[in-house]
Length: 210
Length: 279
Image (cartoon, rainbow over all chains, first blue to last red):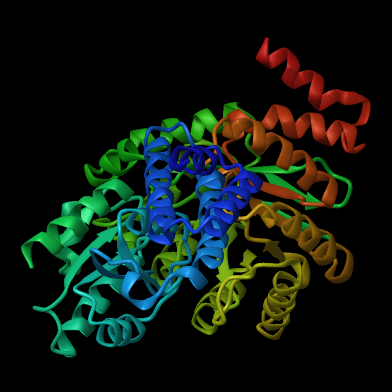
């Protein structure tokens, strides 16, 4: 039965997912088991994207189906059974830059790999990143940017983090089309990633080192 | 509305019932490692070859951008502008977010260039428009402002109106303002294309301004990008975009076919000339 749900979600069969979830919930199935199947399916979707078999609209659609599913399952979850996250990540595209696709993919990949992602959107000023890190006590800050001017915004964000006395509590990773180690050094970030899977690997490394 | 651009020896006019003007996008190091490395090594031959290749592919105007980490734009942009002027006789589109680099490039340019771009953001309006006025250039107005990026046609139109008003206040004639309706990928938002097309119709119809697009953004993250770019180019032509910023070699045949169908290519002269060139 679990296989049905995994397959339906991987195939992006919205109606089938809805039906299977509904009948499993009505049959008294463990809601956590249902969410675990969803996680398995999203991992497959993520792998297919990484291999160039699935494309961005399919990631977006899978995310939407998952969201509807979570809404349906939520009333059946009690407090004790709430999902346990690997760690928290604050994510956003830095001030002056509006490119969102790469950032969204990183957010999706972190999410399906068990991270609690706080996505602040695009053109995010340093102050907002710092506030969110303080509020969530997230140990990871992920900054995205495509334009050349984004490097200065990244640098300013890292500096703002230091000014708030948080620099040694938070690992900063950066990403975006042109990012290199030279740029990482310029911004003062800890690491950089070339793609979303690299971002996930870095986040896991940061959490393991905590 | 007609926007005239020029090099030292040639004029290009955007608008009216004229064929679509194609602005070659390839002199831009974003995502082109070979170009970045050449610029770092001060090898401007690569720029010269890229300019000639785009002119031969049928570009009407060339975009020139050197914005990449590790390059001093203020020093490099005027040199690249001079290099391209020496290689081809096409008008140029000076593409930078750095106003000092913009001024240096305008100083070096011979003719009436297109400046790419001013946005609706206060900092951009106050730094770019005075330079456009001082050097008698035309300017691309990109529809984003301090409130962020527009998701729909209404916001795009409002920002276009604001940029036009501020340009006229700065003494720039309205025909010298070309609005870039800001294309996002249909990969992440399927309504992106239709909102841009609606914005083009409104900017053309209600403000009378010429419109341009950074066309290839439409297909980011999707397979067979040229197919989507070609379909979008045809729709943009019909909606009234007078010029497009594109990879000319790849998109031009499609645009010529679209111009022909839209009644902008009398006796199919341009379409047929390009057909013979391709054979």
